[in-house]
Length: 331
Image (cartoon, rainbow, N blue to C red; front, side):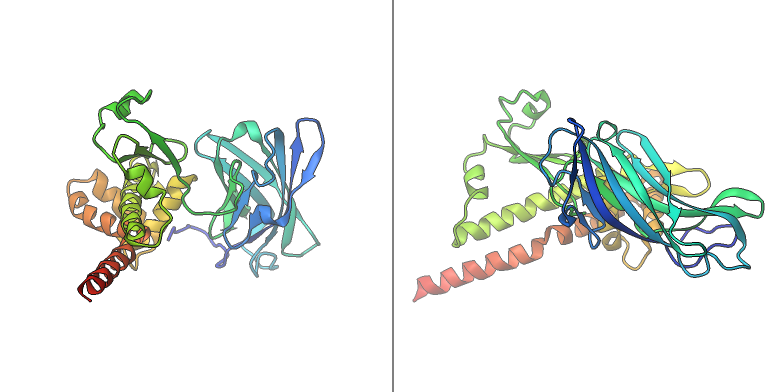
């Protein structure tokens, strides 16, 4: 938990998306269905309408401040509410002031414009209540407890990790770096905008097995293969996310605003059970950059990846299927 040297509100701001529309290249506007955003997932998917020619998006926001924001004896003045969209990949940051809906009310609203050319994939949307405290302007007195995701590409408002799976002949690939791994069944590239899994078509049978839809032993082997692949993916993307953290002087590492931040928030509770994710991030960073503890941490990271991949269930299903086949062969 971050400690502030001044009085703040104890509860978070509540953010809602009320509507989303796209401005197309011909000047027309398309009002998207409510399925373009999910309050549960806290995600907006601007690709849901299938437009390839949209220029900008308008996201209408509504924010409710916690009780006490307008108290006569509040320690702050000059109250403002800001919506801030941050894209760590393109290094673009957009902020807009929201407007109070009613005098002395706690509800604020307003539009946020998202320019397509400013973003390649996902951006992080946060809302802050700021004011003048102890003579200092622009101090944050409350914010939402978790940022929303604005995805400029996806057609599904899902917050979780998205992967790009590509088939390639590692021996003949135009990506020369793949040729050095010609005997690997798959590789994970965690440096891409979207984590990419390359499946090696040179490995006999792997594509057919992954694409099988039967219900026999093949399906159980496929599930095991997918679970192993998923474990590798989660391990690779965790290391990719932790490897290039931004560090704020005096407060330590901060969560990335793209898929890397989501990976860390998903896995850290299993890496450090019972520890708040902010403190868990600091502990991982200290071990990675310090003199000890990083090697021991690999076991915890692998465990977290196994849980995310649901590998135990896939293994249990495969064992039960084999036991059943053995019993049937004995009768």
